[in-house]
Length: 293
Ligand code: ATR
Image 1: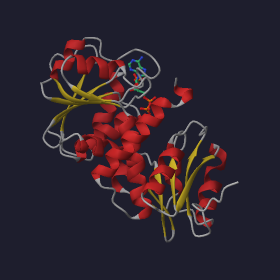
Image 2: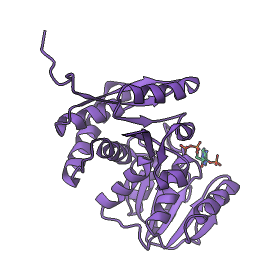
Image 3: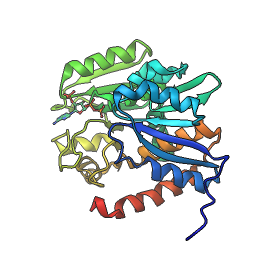
């Protein structure tokens, strides 16, 4: 038997609401971060069905829960249950982090902050850059708004269903005066070089596929972030690297969105070196987990 003194009466409780949520990596991520930074808090996962979401959010506030992550399928529905929403999260129309305030929870989108940190830590500025977003779903939405809010020079959107990319373009242009071109996924030959690319489709998740068939396209890319990280080296990352581009999978985004959530809950700022160290440690752990083999 061993004394466990890491969780005490004054410990703050944080967690994640999802349905299902058993696969979530966030408990390992957050408890590792809390311990590394000596934060008096504990984090766990709550399987909350859609019907119970209002009661769960209200109950969490009543119980003094400090902060929450919100994942599928609640990222939109939770917005009606909050006392305030960060403007960028409101524009995107999705909230993945709740932060305790005096009168209720405030909603944020740290998926976008995680992606922003990923670019920053690799030394690539979105300001003035030509940015290509592949996809037009929830992840692409966050990526497009990040590019616009960071002052990208030109935004290119390519999605299997063109109408969805056009709708996303209008949504972004309702908030930002940015040049946007919608292009077909099958023909990206008109795009300029030195592109920053965010692969935000679900293509390649658990399979050896990429949304771009002509791998010579990747010669136009400077830096590529693929939101997918299973398999660890996705076909998109593989193809991009083979054509000379710098490319990373979506694991860093996952870790950096978690760090951004913890920063909001605890009112702290995690320095770049700590963020990189945590990311490397968790990447090793994730790749060596028995159930990922
Ligand atoms: P998320 O919220 O994770 O972004 P989503 O909203 O389901 O997920 O969006 C999935 C994205 O992957 C969409 O852009 C989808 O394209 P469509 O809008 O045409 O459905 C894209 N996608 C999924 N399967 C694809 C495939 N086989 N080829 C190309 N794009 C695909």
